[in-house]
Image 1 (cartoon, rainbow, N blue to C red):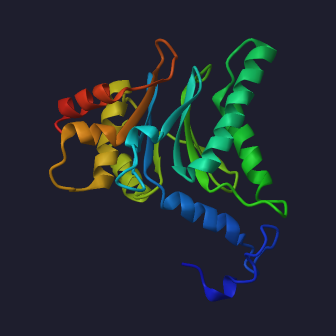
Image 2 (cartoon, rainbow, N blue to C red):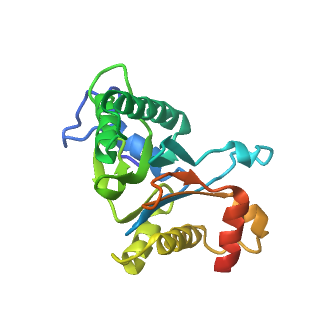
Length: 246
């Protein structure tokens, strides 16, 4: 994956290679690339986040795995990469969101929340004795600027998106979104496109019971009407998949 000559420059996060690269940041990015897929689609009246759950062992209770989580009433996140690292960042984001409510009596702006997360990520690329967070987060919600969708990178960089994917097969899904996304898409269209993206990445896996398939997909969404981020229960996910004929 990485050339042999990189050895020696990846012993500490503070060491640049002769080409100006930080190899540990690139290793963290690889951890994200091999994580289960997460997708996000922004519509004209809301945002959809969805993720694929993969059990590390057949005896693991799949319901105990969380792919989409709530940060505040108006914002949620989907994970790709190391869940332990994500848990730390999400806990910090929840605290930051509540501090904003207590200080200013209003929900935090999505971009401000993303910047705070990425400031923490960037610090862990700069100081010895630390390692980068091996996780990317899709952050979606609604604030005064309308529907918002961002990704955070292990390096501390972030981008705003109309539709995107992180994790395994994310390149395939982004290409699919590029060909099928429309700026006029509404929340229902965003939901349909997000699920189609996940199915595109899964490919043909043979006959799978619809109930079991619904357990492997987690969906969170927020509408401009109520501005409340909700994570759909498994039975609603199953109904959506049945309606789509997947």
